[in-house]
Image 1 (tube, helix red, strand yellow):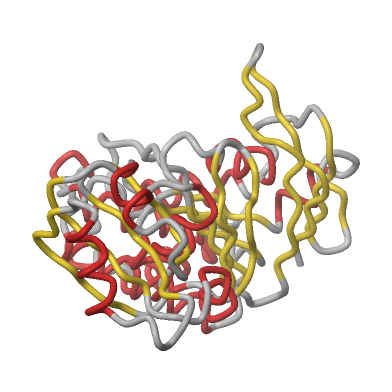
Image 2: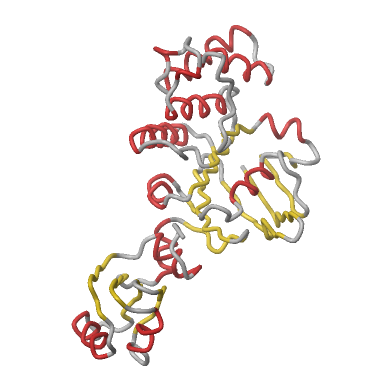
Length: 308
């Protein structure tokens, strides 16, 4: 459904997106996971045609975005990170306005607006000015606007930013239902749990590059099959590395106050690890063990936590 090849974009000396390529099959929910500034929004802006790439191509269905922009954009719905709605209008008036820009007739707009307002839980307040809405309600309306013309593919750029956990879960449930009904979705987020819960496939992105792509299970293998051990305490990253030098461990990250690693051999256990750290002068205040996650994959690929 969506094929992107070699997208690049420069802003002066900054390489914001660097040769990004990916494919999204029809009906698939594809996630871009990365910190703020990773290049996710710039990538989405190029995929939907708001920003022209310096290099690369975008195909939506049978159409090339820049050779046939009118037909291509009719297949796309966009839910931008910044709210795209008019607060002095009601929710229904917003849907009628945006749907009219796509050429929907009056009867179709009336029916479609009603369907979407029910879907996003705003039917009972559909005639109120949007200025009276909470942040979560505005986000739900923003999502409905992106769906008004029944797009084949929906692009969601951080659709839950700035809202409370309950409102976020509500929006994620709606997105999940949309995907189940066959809409192709590209979804950007810097929340690990959102990507893990929602996405069929995920691209991990940092500094403008896609570092790895796959399902959650496939990506977990990147961090290794063994449990991830995180230690916290009063130490420097260098102290931990020196204390365990020559031992069968693999570091995902070694920073001041926290280090994350794997034990590479089954006979090298936690008791041995703690003893070795103690002999090396490393004071451990807390130790946790978990299965490989997207967090450990991100650490492995970038050497830092996603929230940094």
